[in-house]
Length: 98
Image 1 (cartoon, helix red, strand yellow):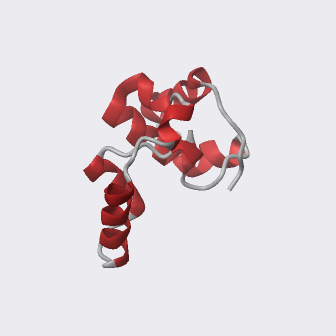
Image 2 (spheres, one colour):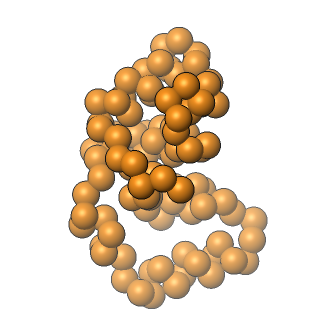
Image 3 (cartoon, one colour):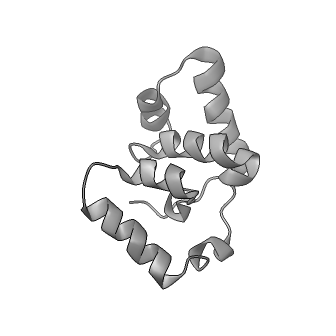
């Protein structure tokens, strides 16, 4: 996965193109050389947290306890839930996608 960082304004622009013009996630990612699934994750973060969900912060990297992380990993390993669904369920923001 790329370590490229995108501005909040850029993310909002792409989400607006998707919302207003029906441009597919695939097309937005392909045209902007963005990893597959990234724009969909931005939309999920935006829907959950608003514009603040599109801002990457260093504090996001250390805010979860070890026991919480273990609980989430165990649920993922038990199967039946995607990482995106887990993020929604527990209110987790994925910093590597922001």
